Image (tube, rainbow, N blue to C red; front, side, top):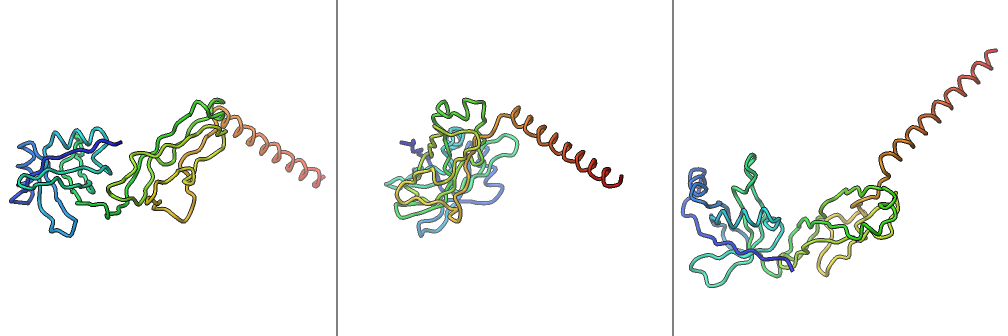
Length: 220
């Protein structure tokens, strides 16, 4: 089961760029708490807690709880907008959405490939060409799949992995519904592709020479 982070949260009395900068200098990450039929409020989260979740890949698309002083129960939330410093690479603003067991959201779930050692195509030198590293789904906010595992056993060179290969949990549906989209393919090794390309090029030249010879014969 995925770890559920708990963020200590305080309400910000003031908003604006100056207030946000001041919060960051004091070790906080400013943000907005919204949703749940309640008015949005300005908040600030402890920087070390946000960084830890972000670096471990849990900040986005993972259910969390916020602990607000003075409130009896922790509130389940999910980060919906995370602004990252363009140079330092850590979160500088986080918008949190209140959720409950009735909330459904679109979310990107990571894909993990297993049993690669049992793929004949990969054993022959093929390459796992990942088209999508994650898949967008609609899911209950309190039951978001942690990861989709895809078994590549038995796949040969040229075979593909499509959305239909994923067994979706109850209540979870793909955002894309009009096609069985590709997630990955077993591509031929580069050396084989190069030799095939050279072969096709040689065939093209041979056909061109043959056509030229036919033209010469006709002129004679």
